[in-house]
Image (cartoon, rainbow, N blue to C red):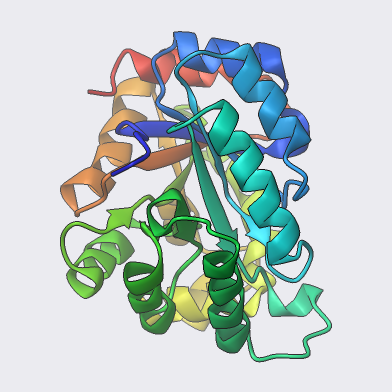
Length: 276
């Protein structure tokens, strides 16, 4: 792989990440900082984070294809790659149909956007694709370094690996709550999982494909589903759950600490001692 992600990274909304946080993540030994929430395509924020660190990889999880045109993103990529070679992974995707006024089918949009990134000279090995279902997972293997599945389980990781084959990046996201009390942990996880994700078609369909029922998904999510999507327990227990993605075939796992309104560094520091 042209970009070294390491085994573990963290996932956080881009607006909640500053240079100080990036520096602490690097010190803790995480390989990659994933910026979610549709970071702006000018990548000025990303450039600042790279300037403030020395070895940390920055990945977008994701740039929204409907929001930022490929020509602008391509030019931003080249500026970043020239200044910080080998430290940036461009993750792109179509986001959620509920949030878009679509003029193309999502799959067609992905293909045309990747075509435009080709025209802009963005290398296949420096880009990844948000992918859940079989069709887009296959496309990620054909047109990018690989897939960045979000809100998934190790069972999905295993199926995705079988589908894309070896030598293709598979970097799932996993939410965690460092809390041993089950009720408090589920309260912390259920809110951000249910709203918005369990109401979005692409995530619902993916969970149904994995064998979860409508009753598991509705009403805020069953305890069993929430426990899978938002791992909880002490640091050793959570770390063991994260490693199950690697055991299922992932190359890298990006960890999102919940709840989102607290300082995530204590969670990441505690986990770092147990992630090998």
